[in-house]
Length: 291
Image 1: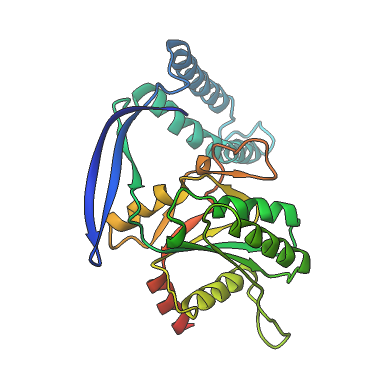
Image 2: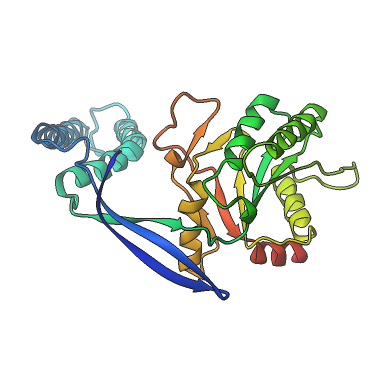
């Protein structure tokens, strides 16, 4: 759904002695795609037909004390089963219908964006385990091409499969960047596992990345994570960080689906789950020590 910009203002905030500038764009949603008199009429007609059907269905049921009807209770059980089977889509359609008929169209929301070169430090984790090298490298290149000060974030490639090809691809891409424009530091890591030590799959891979980040001598203020096939848009970090800066109690931020594309999809699904997040590394490090 496209948006229409309505207003813009700058917010100055100081966190841990560092001043940041955040741009707030207040935007209004365009008309809902289903906003029309025809749609409203169809919704009302649908619910009228639904009520008529239930009324007719109920009136056709035999009484429980009907002595001339074979097993009248079985007809009531079938009716109840039908009602319970239709309950989930009923509630879903009810929510949509109420918004179309009575929804507030004046709702507005603010979009935040970190402005300038003053930015908190971030470690971006790209987790992978046996995916195609080209697929992972597309994600790494997108993570390393963020519209964010290159000296304020690093990219960690956390390879749970220990792929030699991927390690070489990361090294080649890193050396190629040296001769070009400034890019963030790109680090390839693969944890050593044994049969005696539980691996905990992706959670263990992230835990390994957190430990390596904390022990690198440069502990970032925030941690961000991407799946192997999640290609982040260039403003992903600038859009996510302001929410964490403005609310000191906030520990996790999910960005909307359009903030990223997927290598195995032609078009992002509008209702798909959110795949990337940012969390305060201080809280994660404290959690890691307790585990």
